[in-house]
Image 1 (spheres, rainbow, N blue to C red):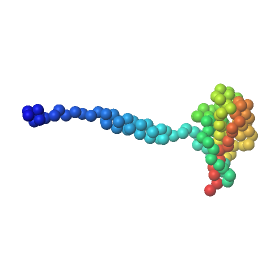
Image 2 (image 1 turned 120 degrees about the vertical axis):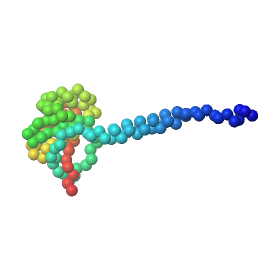
Image 3 (image 1 turned 135 degrees about the vertical axis):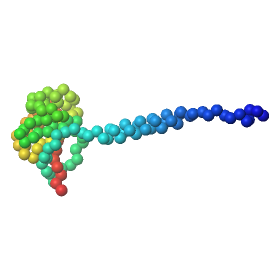
Image 4 (image 1 turned 180 degrees about the horizontal axis):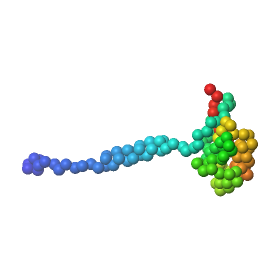
Length: 131
């Protein structure tokens, strides 16, 4: 009879706490991944009425009005761009060229030639959709 009157010792259940902590960890990781901005150089793109969505490029090449080639914040020459693309897997590399509105056709062709010399066949031109 005496056993029934003794207070039970409190137990702290840690399994539900571990579940909640794991859920919070996964939640914050997912939110953080969506907060990381993609890097690039702002450019005044040409407009096109037939612009379509392209898959996310593996390499984004920016060409400004002076013909300066920029990849991931690095200024490259056409030969350096060819070397960089050839070092990757050129057969499966998607390159998008973001040429400034004032960039000449010759400057864009120079970048396209550099990509093709590296073996890249999937090349897209970035444009702003006409509204």
